[in-house]
Image 1 (cartoon, one colour):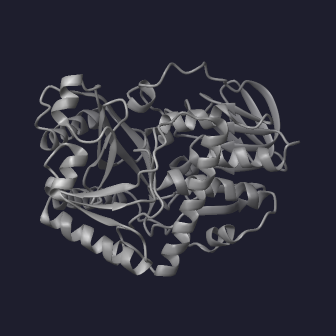
Image 2 (image 1 turned 120 degrees about the horizontal axis):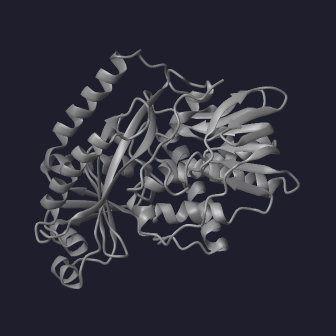
Length: 438
């Protein structure tokens, strides 16, 4: 089977570009034979490869990414490892309480595994266990935050309200009229986290970057074709999210989306003083189609909004330019006191959603396993799913694994062009409703 669509990212990812220069990529070449091959170097693939290496130290494990780890989708996210996410499809932002509790247990287990790796390997990734703030700028935002708090009440979860004065004390801007703080989220520099995880693998795990898989042949030993060689393996694990359908799985079930972010230049000392507020913070929008905003420890401001339909899962330059203008408006609305601060980087990242918010997890075919489609909460959820997938491959059972095996699977989607029209229309309506929250 020939792989027709490959990831193709630019060099505008501010998270990676502001890190020290990375070492040269280890590209796959020649004939490589391994026991396990993991395709995809995001949170799921990194966790799966690590766990396979930990549990089967005599085995040979290959982790393969088409791009540089850190410049892939995992390194382009907002950097929130969330324990309790709001499901925007359900009443009060959650489904049944039992299902929600299972999701929280999975997410917290993912956080725990990440925490252990970061601590043991001394990964410098601006790890901050400060929770998240759902920020509201309008009365509609207030109402959505209130609905979310009702769900938290049913769960018995901790949270606190922050008034307008408190939000200004945190952010330095009077844009937000209210905030709802939940303590369980961890904020990270995502590119620093994933590059650190890739560099600290067990000795029996080899990481190959800039090594796109161009073809696959299934058999007793699966063979992956690459530009300069082949990789054969007894067991294949797919952790490449929206690109997994290129390998023949769930071709008509995943919605290809691009999400967009911009990072400002570093603030000058006088601009830091003018802005005020805390040295670092993170805002999740009360309206899910509003803007995520972060102030980083190196005095930059991140703005993330706009979902766009990306049929081939790559971000187009024309769309990037349009998004940059929208991000400038979002920045100016919040930080009018910083008129001279430009957005130094603007980038997009690939995301896959399912119509019914269900994931893919488990055995896909003989000797082929997969975990993808985490519906936008991939840092914590992707991590635990990768770990659990490795444990499943090696026959280890657990309550958390049973949660994933019992989950639903993505529904089939309508054909093109209906799918594209529907997704674009849905996004346009939601952006309009978000209003000033955007």
